[in-house]
Amino acid sequence: MSDVVAGRRGPKLEPVVLADEERSTLERWVRRRKSAQALALRSRIVLACARDDVPPVVGVAKELGVSADTVRKWRRRFLARRLDGLVDEPRPGRPPVIGVDDVEAVVVATLEETPKDATHWSRSSMAKRSGLSKSAVGRIWRKFQLKPHLTDTFKRVHSRVGPDLRGVVT
Image 1 (cartoon, rainbow, N blue to C red):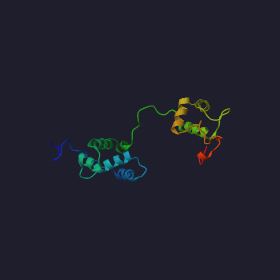
Image 2 (cartoon, helix red, strand yellow):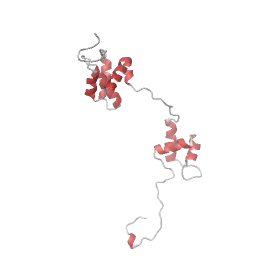
Image 3 (tube, helix red, strand yellow):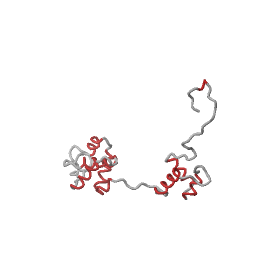
Image 4 (cartoon, rainbow, N blue to C red):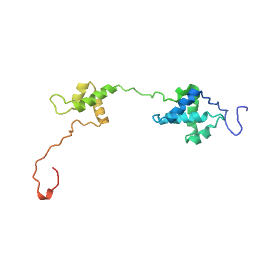
């Protein structure tokens, strides 16, 4: 029973001891405006767990407004892999096939070029030009809200404006 601390359940927690460099990096991640909020929270959790008195997990959770399981997870990850354990892991799934350069080329061509023998780009004509599929071109246009079939100009309709239609633009 030497592993149990009075007033606390469970095994004695391994203290989180930070090197000066680790502490300064964690504090920088907490303060930096451009840090992802998730990384800043993880850094706050580790800093709170690194006090001299080895605070209970539940106390840190209440202080930071997170669940005790969240504190346990990031505390355990930090102890196992140090600062690298706080950074997001790669997500599962297929990596993107269409590169940023391909997307940029489609957007620029859509906005700045006109196809031969046509007034505007269609999905199939842009697909032939770019080497991408028609559905990929459609996804890119949808993402960037491009509608090449709609133009910025308008057609003027000639009509007679009578006294009852004064002020109406046709």
